[in-house]
Length: 159
Figure 1 (cartoon, rainbow, N blue to C red):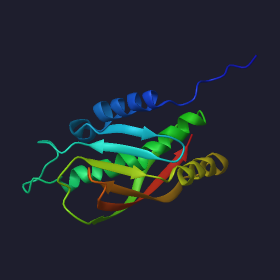
Figure 2 (cartoon, rainbow, N blue to C red; figure 1 turned 45 degrees about the vertical axis):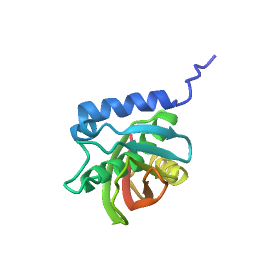
Figure 3 (cartoon, one colour; figure 1 turned 120 degrees about the horizontal axis):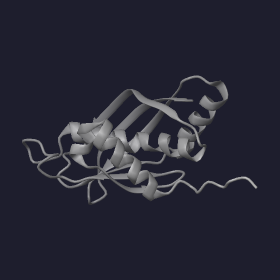
Figure 4 (spheres, rainbow, N blue to C red; figure 1 turned 90 degrees about the vertical axis):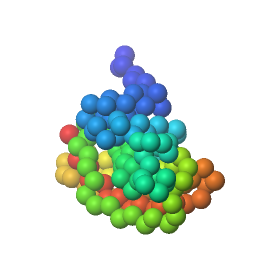
């Protein structure tokens, strides 16, 4: 009988994010993004507005907003690599940001591009090359108002 591996769980991905944030990307660990939702299509990440993430105007610093977009736009690559039992080399190739209003509350970063990211992973598995894909991330305040829109170009290569 073949061994059945368990599905990728939210708990496992939270643990992987913790490890990544605390041992590989210190600024991410400093801001402590929280993975709120992760499924085949959607990622939701929260960064609290606090002393670590505020600017001199008492709104979220644009660097903190970039970290939130980074996590929301990138965690799916690791999710699908785990799902397909592969290792992934992942980076951002470019980023475009529109800051719409000051983020004066905790910010929720939402990416609904799971299908696009999985297609990029599958294409990389098939071609054994690096694949680039644009994904959209929206940043929302507690009132669900858009405070920023990000277009992140991800670059993945599966090993």
